Length: 274
Figure (cartoon, rainbow, N blue to C red):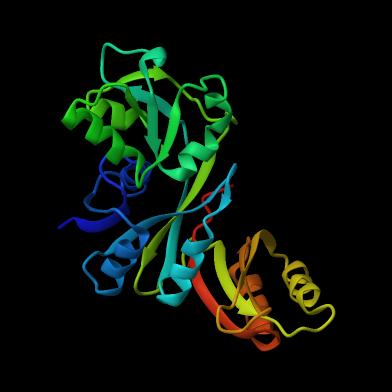
């Protein structure tokens, strides 16, 4: 029996592409319009896994998603980096001069904003999902409206690509994480961990943690701070670390768990960015 994978967005979205590649097409897909609904499906065990975008090389971190993972005690069990190529797509028989509006996810619009400076006649409209806009254009035969979406979305919904790779920066990569309700119990191939902790307001407290990372031969690949909603001016830190030897990570983990408050492992998994 295939795994049931929850994705934010619909068939043809970048989350769909990641799912196809990571699970090698050995999964059934369930669509969710919001990340909140996706998370709820994992918490209630309606899906085996969830696929969630976490950061982009142009636009940065999707900070609310860090909070969703933490607050719902989900576990990162894998990751996938995807080269994001944004295409401007519409119904056949039109070109760029016919387009009056472009509807897409805010992140996609942000990543393509420089392209649209050349076309001031086009109104940019925020929407919930890139592929969902493509599907709507196809089903309702919407003239003069275009979507920003993947090659796969254009193919699935029989739309025409009028401009390829319109993102501002050619190399545009997004990191997606694979989520489960329960932690990864397999220790083979684990070479990366995502960790959350809090620190006292003391001089050098963060530097001390980073020294542990360095001394234990770990590589810090990400650090992100989020404010604690119920405690003004107190922050949680989210870090990603990679390592060659699992025992080095185990040593660092034991030390950091003593030094930091509310120390929490969000996930232990294979590093896919090597």
